[in-house]
Length: 445
Image (spheres, helix red, strand yellow):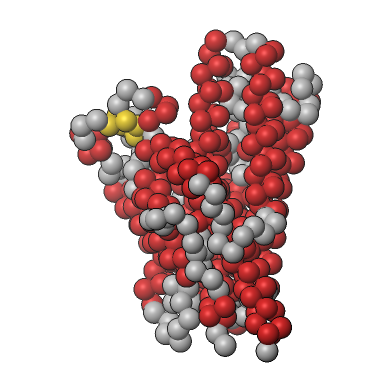
């Protein structure tokens, strides 16, 4: 009996199609530049932010109607971790407001809580709305395609030394905070895609690379013997744009993503990936004179780089900023750049949400990885195994990359995290129900 046969179909209210709703979120997150807002709404006007709030409301109505995820509740570690993170954030916000804040910190704190509500909506719809592994596969294919298009845009920006997004500012009803020019490092343009910063762009591309690799090895997460070359194109685009990103974090993330993907690969695929990476380095070195020496200098001279020294000095300042409230921190969104720029989300979370918030964020990463790994180990389905292991690799890669920039300040990087976390929990729920269903079938034989 095929494993898919014992999987119950997702049930919910009429038209409850989480894949479709989350696909809209992906389009808004990847296709619309992150610094585009609806005119008049300011920081609250990002389309992806508003859609996340809609998802939260949609999920709330669905739950108020008495619905639960298909097959009933299964204990979800990711739900517990996310609940803990939200509770800590709310408690920290309340404490910060009761303590009193400068006028210019109240609005950022309110905005941070609205963003948290949006992320929660994405997480919950992914967690409870994905009822079949085929649904998860469809959504991951669309995420891989989105990442491939983003990488392609980044390559075009690098070559043409232009953002290629100026036309967005002419659309009525939208406010586009266009950059005057493409960011440069040395003589090379730093691609941003539709992200607000090269660091965010690199994190999203590298964070989804394990999913691109898994899709290439499974014909787009399908149980098929065919191996289509087109599924390797997202991998090629992602690796290429990372090699020309002129970014230490992107190069480190690329290495982490490839190494964490190796357990999910056949021997032949590992050979192809390693050889392809070496060839890509050679091609880039020849095709882009000066790129190889520039990238090497990023690491050789890292100790003298101002951004590296700033990150190192930040650790010595943490006790000072944390002393007022070590458990709950200063409050999400209240620690403004004028105080210090950490360029490290883990450290910033420690200051914003204290020890409790940092542990809760770590729990989201850990439980997401555990859930996906548990799903891959309890399933005999080839695609489910590939999806589970690649999700583990992606979550781990994002956890590492969060040490290199303030990820929560950028919508794309944090949106991808909570979407993947929800998918990890959903995959765990679906495979756990399959195991229960198989045992029930055997018990009746």
